[in-house]
Image (cartoon, rainbow, N blue to C red; front, side, top):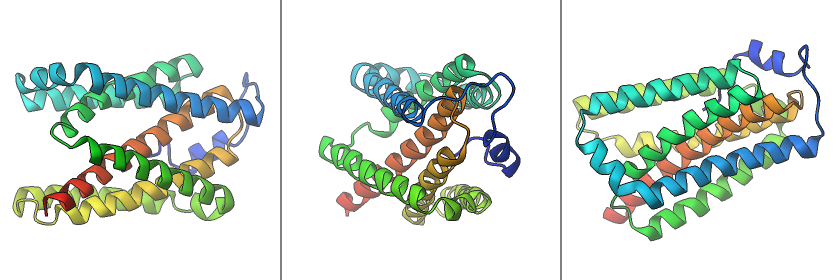
Length: 231
């Protein structure tokens, strides 16, 4: 889910701002890759070392307290990433990744390791494929920002209605839709990376967008595979 998707923000990032220093394409891509790796390693350590503690902690608190705390941290992280410089963007990225590690602890609880490994592999293949597509068809993907935003909004609202009124009978339909939307978001955000000014701040900001795309895609692939195995 891209951060700062508006055309105005996209246009701003395509030019160097006052005080910005342009870095090489290699350094720019290395920072994006390094930040993604940092987020994934942080999540892995959280799940591997603290899953049981996180599950006990969340089970002993009100779901509303957890949800409010989660959204406060993620929204604060989003604000820091989109408005701050490199240092503040790094802190914001961490505020996004850390609570998502807790969500992964809950979401992956009871899921067979074989499904998790397969989901990681599929996510990696889809991510690489849409990054390549974003490079080859940059103009096409850049036009999808508004369409993807409203498609995601429709999917979220539809899934909530399905859960509340129809006991989630159409849940897997929305999981498939979500997987498709976040796959396209990866292409969109990578296309943004190919057109933005190459600065450290932009690299970290785009890393946060790609990180959210990939994690959301992974969670939906896990849900789809788990449902398929139950059937």
